[in-house]
Image 1 (cartoon, rainbow, N blue to C red):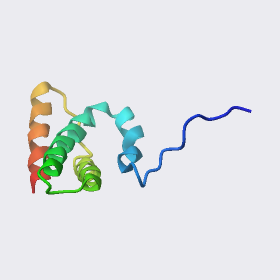
Image 2 (image 1 turned 90 degrees about the horizontal axis):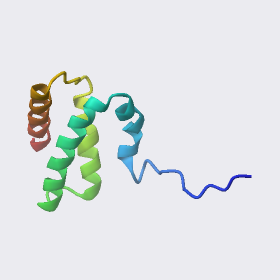
Image 3 (image 1 turned 180 degrees about the horizontal axis):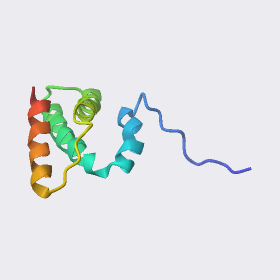
Image 4 (image 1 turned 45 degrees about the horizontal axis):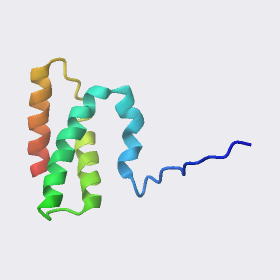
Length: 89
Protein backbone atom coordinates (compact mmCIF):
# COMPACT_ATOMS: atom_id res chain seq x y z
CA UNK A 1 0.00 0.00 0.00
CA UNK A 2 1.40 3.37 -1.05
CA UNK A 3 1.43 6.10 1.54
CA UNK A 4 0.63 9.58 0.25
CA UNK A 5 2.88 12.27 1.65
CA UNK A 6 0.70 15.06 0.33
CA UNK A 7 -2.78 16.15 1.26
CA UNK A 8 -5.36 16.76 -1.42
CA UNK A 9 -5.47 20.46 -2.30
CA UNK A 10 -8.53 22.14 -0.83
CA UNK A 11 -10.17 24.33 -3.49
CA UNK A 12 -11.90 26.34 -0.76
CA UNK A 13 -8.53 27.34 0.62
CA UNK A 14 -6.79 27.60 -2.78
CA UNK A 15 -9.56 28.58 -5.23
CA UNK A 16 -7.16 29.27 -8.10
CA UNK A 17 -6.39 25.53 -8.19
CA UNK A 18 -9.69 24.88 -9.97
CA UNK A 19 -8.33 26.24 -13.26
CA UNK A 20 -4.98 24.46 -13.27
CA UNK A 21 -6.00 21.91 -15.91
CA UNK A 22 -7.33 24.65 -18.19
CA UNK A 23 -4.09 26.60 -17.88
CA UNK A 24 -2.04 23.52 -18.66
CA UNK A 25 -4.19 22.92 -21.75
CA UNK A 26 -4.13 26.60 -22.81
CA UNK A 27 -0.88 28.13 -21.54
CA UNK A 28 -1.33 31.34 -23.55
CA UNK A 29 -4.08 32.28 -21.09
CA UNK A 30 -1.36 32.72 -18.52
CA UNK A 31 -1.16 36.36 -19.60
CA UNK A 32 -4.60 36.88 -18.06
CA UNK A 33 -3.63 35.26 -14.78
CA UNK A 34 -0.38 37.17 -14.58
CA UNK A 35 -1.92 40.59 -15.25
CA UNK A 36 -4.87 40.02 -12.92
CA UNK A 37 -2.62 38.69 -10.18
CA UNK A 38 -0.27 41.68 -10.40
CA UNK A 39 -3.20 44.11 -10.10
CA UNK A 40 -4.61 42.02 -7.25
CA UNK A 41 -1.30 42.04 -5.37
CA UNK A 42 -1.08 45.82 -5.69
CA UNK A 43 -4.66 46.16 -4.43
CA UNK A 44 -3.85 43.82 -1.53
CA UNK A 45 -0.74 45.80 -0.56
CA UNK A 46 -2.81 48.98 -0.71
CA UNK A 47 -5.37 47.32 1.58
CA UNK A 48 -8.09 47.60 -1.06
CA UNK A 49 -8.81 43.85 -1.07
CA UNK A 50 -8.21 40.85 1.17
CA UNK A 51 -5.88 38.00 0.32
CA UNK A 52 -8.91 35.84 -0.52
CA UNK A 53 -10.20 38.54 -2.87
CA UNK A 54 -6.94 38.32 -4.79
CA UNK A 55 -7.79 34.81 -6.00
CA UNK A 56 -11.39 35.82 -6.69
CA UNK A 57 -10.23 38.76 -8.81
CA UNK A 58 -7.87 36.55 -10.78
CA UNK A 59 -10.56 33.92 -11.39
CA UNK A 60 -13.09 36.57 -12.39
CA UNK A 61 -10.67 38.02 -14.95
CA UNK A 62 -9.73 34.55 -16.19
CA UNK A 63 -13.37 33.72 -16.84
CA UNK A 64 -14.09 37.11 -18.46
CA UNK A 65 -11.14 36.70 -20.84
CA UNK A 66 -11.63 32.96 -21.37
CA UNK A 67 -11.42 33.18 -25.17
CA UNK A 68 -8.06 34.92 -25.47
CA UNK A 69 -5.49 33.20 -27.61
CA UNK A 70 -2.66 35.59 -28.44
CA UNK A 71 -0.79 34.89 -31.65
CA UNK A 72 1.94 37.50 -31.25
CA UNK A 73 3.83 39.41 -28.62
CA UNK A 74 1.84 42.53 -29.51
CA UNK A 75 -1.38 40.66 -28.75
CA UNK A 76 0.04 39.50 -25.41
CA UNK A 77 0.77 43.12 -24.45
CA UNK A 78 -2.70 44.22 -25.58
CA UNK A 79 -4.40 41.48 -23.56
CA UNK A 80 -2.24 42.40 -20.57
CA UNK A 81 -3.42 46.03 -20.81
CA UNK A 82 -7.07 45.03 -21.17
CA UNK A 83 -6.94 42.66 -18.21
CA UNK A 84 -5.28 45.27 -16.00
CA UNK A 85 -7.95 47.84 -16.92
CA UNK A 86 -10.68 45.29 -16.21
CA UNK A 87 -9.20 44.46 -12.79
CA UNK A 88 -8.82 48.10 -11.81
CA UNK A 89 -12.58 48.71 -12.09
